Length: 295
Image (cartoon, rainbow, N blue to C red; front, side, top):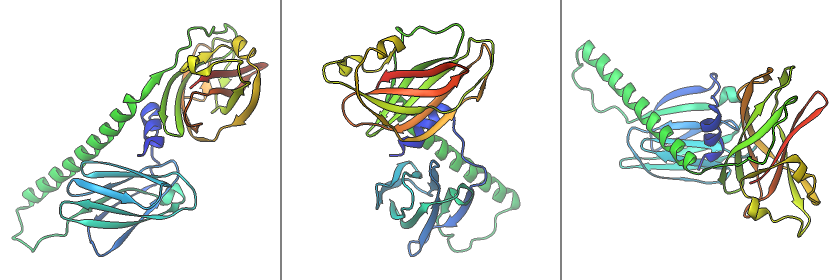
């Protein structure tokens, strides 16, 4: 599965660098195709017919396929592995290179069947029409694959309730609004509002896991709830850990008076029961800007 970046793309409309490569290749079952990758970026392999099954040699590369399109994403540095893909008439092999520079990554590898024996050349107008039709089909298949991945991710989304949180009237506020869970990863959407009289420079927050002392609070009863600052200060904390943020996107960096901004971040989280997380942003002049939620 490729939920790490797919979910962030869904929630924050992330883009792929324009410098990535798009290549067109003829399928050759006797050749191992090399695929250059980059962290936090998806590479797509387009096949001329629907994919039946696929297998990758390492969990450090995540794959998912739909119709004729296979998407892959590396999740660790310095690792290479192999990939096999089967369709009704072909078996193809790939060497997935360790994540490198975004400018060298393969964005789309468009693979086609070997050309059949030469046939009488069609009229020029027919050739142009055939190419246009093939291009439309490939674009449609990619759109269908992307739509399927988006739909599956959105089905796993849960709202985060913040009805007990009171917004300030003179400095920046943060609301945690949505969470998507995928094994050891959490995707969190948040909203930042600025009711003050001065602009605020927004950046991605640091994330901390706060472990309350036994008996001080029952976290399972607070799942998917944002915790007000006054209530949070009453919790006795046993330990605090810094979480690894895999990816973060924000809709705007400069949040002027009266404006709001949306953000999404993906971080490695504890597996199993709900945990208390604190999201710490840059201060609004002398005011701390943070939020806490049980997710």
